[in-house]
Structures are given as structure tokens and as C-alpha cells.
Image 1 (cartoon, helix red, strand yellow):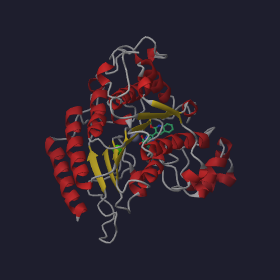
Image 2 (tube, rainbow, N blue to C red; image 1 turned 180 degrees about the vertical axis):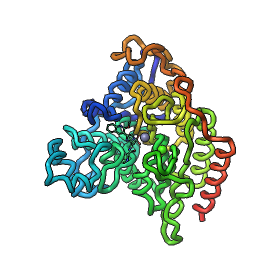
Image 3 (cartoon, rainbow, N blue to C red; image 1 turned 180 degrees about the horizontal axis):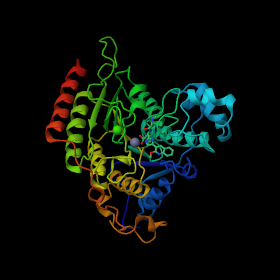
Length: 390
Ligand code: TV1
Ligand code: CA
Ligand code: ZN
């Protein structure tokens, strides 16, 4: 099978459940769980499954999800049905849990949430139990969900649940988020602890880009007695950032964070809406540039929980996550950039049938990030890290 073998010296676990892919948010909704079908097709066609331990994700239990979410909110998710959207007696609850256009009620909603959350919890436990060094759940990464409400296509925050598992063993966990949106739910969940350092790279425009949080100077509670003080790092970006600048920035920020914070494990959210040509995004990254951040994070040599996230042009999401799987199993150089004939739905990858189409040239968005702006980000963040150390 293309000569893809297990990576030398470490173990990768891959957590998935085909039942997640079958859920529909609605025909016009940009979140398409179907992108996971395409990802799976590529991973299998390239023979990458031979290099990993494969696990069928189980549904997270109510109790596991209640480690972060309230029982009231989970009970609501468990019992709500699409017809309740029209029922007047449910309208207060639906509004209070932020159900609506972004976060609709669809058939099987609770099943969907518990399966993607179960994948991330399982993946975290593999790391904690020393049964894996890198654990992947592409169906997870739903970083906006709050303790008692849905937000931005996210209902249950699987990342928070995964980090809580890692914290049972590791004194300090670092969270990195390369989705084009701010990882606000994860940041907020750990806002008041020094045991998690959250780092999000995102498009920032307070009034015109969701969720409007994640400014450079938003670093956690400033009260000196609060242990979470300064343990949130935000990297706010403008439209059109390209591979070279992004990778340079990513390395500069992440290396400084790791040096200062010395985490025992890393959680990497790989939202693919930071790619060029994304239906909702506004960056200019190529599959190679996005993947280079994953490759760099891997070189840190720490236990790594890797999750998906956003990504609204399904063919490109699957290209990125398949490429990143190959990086994580140390087989990127064994992958044919021409997508194999054996891939079902191969027509999705027309006309180039390449794993690496030039996304940054196909829908060129003007780069509004000057070198001066990016240099200032790095300098300011290094200053913030000095304060964090105390
Ligand atoms: C239904 C149908 C919902 C079409 C939502 C884009 C739609 C969006 C839709 C959409 C859309 C958002 C907001 C406005 C909050 C709203 C998985 C009141 C064409 C992790 C979530 C983005 C990103 C939410 C999630 C955002 C993630 N953008 N068409 N909705 N205000 N919501 O701006 O980080 O990728 O767009
Ligand atoms: Ca982000
Ligand atoms: Zn996003």
C-alpha cells in the first residue's frame, strides 16, 4: 500500500465514527459533516490506516459531558426535536441556549454531539494512558460551545472535555487553535486557571467577524490573585495572510509559548477555514502552509491531541486533514500529490485532482497584514509571556 508503514518510535491513534458524517445541519448551512466522508476516503485511499491504531469513537456519556456542561443544557440537547423550533412553549429555552440559524436543531443532534465529543475524550485518554503519542479526531474541534449554550455551529465543547482528561495527568496543557475564528469557548473555560495556556490565531474584526473576541490585549483576568491571569494568548490577524508569514508567525509565537510555559501536552485545533478559498474564511493559506503548522507542532515532541474544527469548502478540508494525517504518521513524502483513482467521489477534486491545488492564487484576497503589524504581534506576545511568568 504505497509503502506506508507505522512511524518509527511513536504511536498514532485515529478516532472516527462514520455515524457522525450522516448528520445534516440543513441544506444551506455551511457546516457539512459530509466533509468527514471525503477526509476518510483520502486517508484510506492513501493507505494511511496501516500506520495508525484505528478506534471507532464511542458516544461520550452524559456524565462525561457534564464535566463541563450543565445538566440542564445537556438534558435540553438530549430531548429537543426539530418540531420544537415551532413550539411556542419551548421558545424561551431555545433562545436561552442560543439555538437558531447558526446552531439549529436537527435530527440526531444529541447523537452527533456525543459522538464527536466521545472521539476527543477517547483520544485524550489514549495519550494519558500512554497508548498513543499522537491522537487524532477530525470530527472534533468545536471550540465555540459554552458551558450552558451553543455557539457558532458548536453545541458540546469536545476540546474542553479532552483538556480536562489531560489535566488529570499533566500539570500544564497548551492549546493551539489555527481555525480562522477565535477559540473563545476554550479560552473562556480555562480563563481562570494557570494550568491551561490557550493560543488562538484568527481573523479579528470586533464588529464584522465572528465571534468578535480575541484582541491582542485580551490575556485573561488581570487580577493579580487570579491564577489564570495572562494565560490566554491571542494572535489577531487581518484578511489575506499567506503561508510564509503565517508559518513564521506561528513558529515565533509557539516556540516562545512552549519555552515559557513548558507544557506536558499539546492540543492542536486544525480548523481548515483558514485555507484560501474557504466559503467563510478570509485567509490565503495553502494546504502545505496549514500543514506546516502541524508539522512544526509535531517537532516539539510532546503528546499531541489533534482535532478538526471549521472548514467550509469540503474538498479542501479533506485535502488538508488527509495531508496533516500523513504528516503526523511521518509519511508526507510517501503521498502521491495526484489523488488516487480509487477515491470514491474523486470528481470532487476536479479539475486538478491534486492534493495541493494553489488555493492562495485561486481567490486572491489582498494581504492586509504588513510586516510591521506582524512583527509588533510577536514583540507584544513575548512581552505578555514575560508578565505571565511573573
Ligand atoms: C444557516 C444557513 C446558517 C446559512 C450561518 C457564517 C448560516 C452562516 C448560513 C454563518 C452562513 C457565521 C455569525 C451573526 C452571529 C452570527 C466550527 C448574530 C454564509 C468552528 C461559526 C461562524 C464558525 C458563525 C465555527 C457565524 C468555527 N458565519 N450561512 N454564520 N451573529 N455567525 O456571524 O469556528 O469554524 O454564512
Ligand atoms: Ca483560531
Ligand atoms: Zn472557524
